Image 1: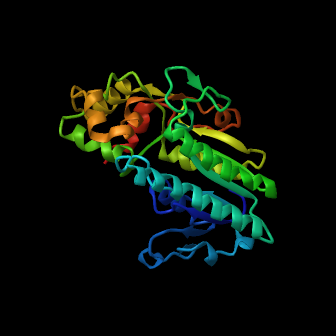
Image 2: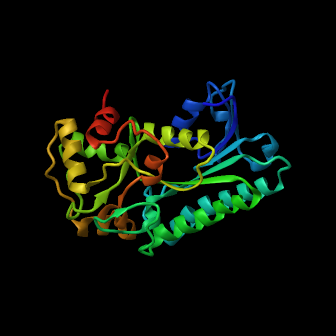
Image 3: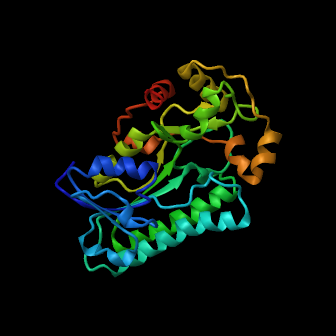
Length: 301
């Protein structure tokens, strides 16, 4: 990467954030904005934790990476939980935009998280960043407003990239942390009819893709952060079972998922076949383009 930069990272205590910090901290300064007590985190020469935007001098920040947000699949979607999912994304992003607007020396780049939920539920049709036939549902509404707020940074001549994340897999965290216990107990299997697509990405490609956006100053706009090889839920389940040498027969019927999770079950029962066209066209080389290799790495001891 280019000479030392000063990064501001929100959501830095999550799965993606921790891996990003590890990739950046040797050669760059990182300020992590967190809702948790900054004193609870280990001291590091190049990493500083703060709990308020007012503690940050934006004149010294070169790159803002905004990952903050209440996990969308952690709790059943009550009206209060939906509000928390929205507010935790929208309000933080609004605060960042206000701080960027007020800065005397503005950051060169804002990378703002989003998700492939922007596209809503879809069938097997491949979806790239130009896709506009959106299914208007809660996940789309969350992402649409989130992206609209972040893109205001362009009004202040800040290069802005939106990263629409797929299902992130990797060791000791991410989506697999919730899947693996059932498979280890030989209770794994597809969800619903298993035909819904799962667009996934390995954590190393999330970090690599973000650094690719930082380094290539001509890149801006929307980027799908998914591996080139999206698979059906049935295929994902079978490859995961094979990787773990476990069975794959405990199918979870749709009515059970709807009973357990209510509206949130749509995250499991519907999907999107998303392709990372703009990342590939910009020259990014995926470390894990195939699911089998990605799962082998993510589940290795």
